Length: 427
Ligand SMILES: [Zn+2]
Image (cartoon, rainbow, N blue to C red; front, side):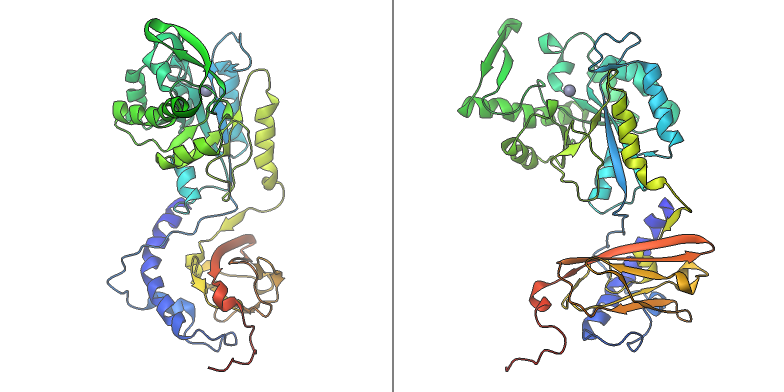
């Protein structure tokens, strides 16, 4: 399925530029079927040589992911707020597999959020915070055993050692080894403290002397810049990597910190307030489920949250909207709030004609017509679409299995004004 998604968009992207030109000409709403060649026909047309823009693939915007945050793996748990035994950890990794939850990499999750790559309907991302030797020595082998990708969120003063490092900090050499083997390494501040101005923090002076203090003004700005930007730069320079994720220590930050992080080139920011990540979850506060030995329910709840959709019936096969030569195309912007919506289902295979259904955001199920001869399902919108973007869901049964495709197009406000039939104002 993944391969299909990856290849099809590339092939069809070229054809799509042609479809668009064609549609620009026949802009006036026409009755279904009366228009020009069936959209499918365009696929067979010769491909225009120059197509500088490769269109984004259609991603499943209904997919969801849960992100787990682990800290220390130890045989004897002494601090159940951050520790878990390797056995309990491994049991959870197995449970994900047993529940059919696919573990994907953080970068795949972000690519999906950008609309560049598809992910399975129910996913998990595994992250480890702070940077402990035990993550290298104990967690990594377990992750290898399951073939799971994962992300390390590192606070750089910890790796540096010294008084903020504690005993079991991971080393740069171990991080380099992880990097060489495909582990994603990301930022978790410099000194792991509350990032907000005026909050009590610990400063380490020359000779390791610790001072509790509250910084404000330029002093705070300098300090927080090192936490947000300095940490990123150090990781990038020491490891020769690109860092685009920032896990906020304890989730303590604010708009000022967010803006600084965005300006520094962070694409995503993470908190510890677990919640399923959806296509529209804001990138500057992605919640993670922090898993601790004394709260095993957190893991179960997270799995339940994302598991809710599995429940009943046959699985749904997701079809890329590009395979259906949809009109309007995915990502296209149309000038009318009364568009003609079409999709060509002929590529899907044998379809039960009675099972074809179209849903339009803002309208619900619409009385679309389906022509079994051409495979085209179409609906002329008769009630103005109110939103700036419109999502269409087309589903049908093929060989007893439900097949579904969905796509989104935009509506330009200017044209959203006069409904069909309004007399044209004098020129
Ligand atoms: Zn941490």
